[in-house]
Image 1 (cartoon, rainbow, N blue to C red):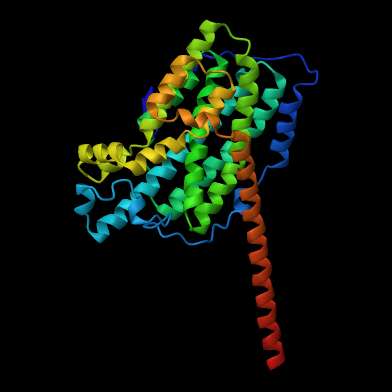
Image 2: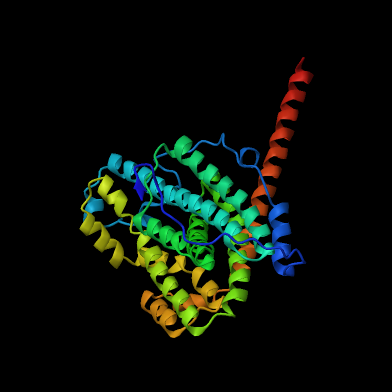
Length: 359
């Protein structure tokens, strides 16, 4: 049932114990080891003292704002545009926060319901990752933006569908492939577009974790789906199609237009027809489509749906290369911060030495 401050529903999947403690799949155990090695503390790794302008969180140029050029946009004063920027940033990061809480619950569900031990091991590391991500986005929203939006109904429905189904793999499919795949693509667009240090840092570090999570879903589901009957595979493909339409429509930002009392119909129509938004939506599927193909859910209905959505060409994206880039960008962010800290320390030492010489 729905609550004022949250969402509750009954999950149908069964708890699975296994008494087979023999060595598991090498690739999953290697990913589990990496998950342990790559744990980090958001309090010490992120520069929370960095200032953020809540009315220009991402430094997005005007022409990149989704309703730029519309009749609604032309009505806005400079103060209105600053207010809109805050609401758009709050909406984006709020949906990231809600998705991360969903991922936290889903990964805990995977530990409980997946039948094999190596998957339980890795999912346990993901539980900690997702708790850290929810902590980070919550702090960023409350301390830096000063506003939190409720969960988008399309995201809420997909979470409900994934977590209330009795089949344990639907939680995997909904979260690891669809929700996290789309979030990774959205994070990447914002990470690469912004010149603001704190959000760029946050997104780079979260993406480093998320790349492992999507890899986990690919490995586990590829093995499992190879054993399914045609009927069972068709049911998963139907879930993918419905979920992808929900994810596409999630980024219409209707809650923002409602909150600001804009002309909703005009904003939504302008976004649906605009090249900027269509291009952004297409890019959002750069992580999902190749993953769906890789795990074997690539029947005619899925391909037709992706063709109608204009994202079928994303099937040829090199997902492994993208995730390798996610890792290296986070590592470069760390290296740049260490270099900056070393130079700052050097300058402070020279200033101190100058003071000493002057005396």
